[in-house]
Amino acid sequence: MNKIDTIIYAFAVVFMGIFLYLYFEYHIYIVGIFFSFLFLNVLLFRMYKGLKRMPMAVMAFMALNFGKDILWAFLWMFVIKKNEVLVMFLALVFLLLSIPLYHSVLREIKNNQKSDKNQL
Image (cartoon, rainbow, N blue to C red; front, side):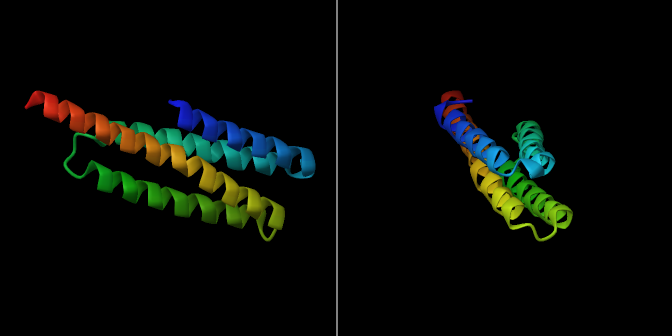
């Protein structure tokens, strides 16, 4: 994890703390939304590391991530019903925590390109 990822995760934790402070009655949902997305991102990144030697690894990752994001958002929308506070937190977590995952994959691609050049 580099500085950019650390800063983004810190922002996400700060926002989670603010939401927990303001809307403590939703603490189970707020913590669940945050850690479920974080867990799924870590799981997906581990899967990508296993797939990265495949010819279309980036496309497979994008498809897996898109499917994960849609299922995750719809599942939480079903759970939280029409609660505006939780929908706003859901969107915030989605936007903030998607960035480090894509950044990590792009960094992996850059490192792979460097190692491919070194092998030539």
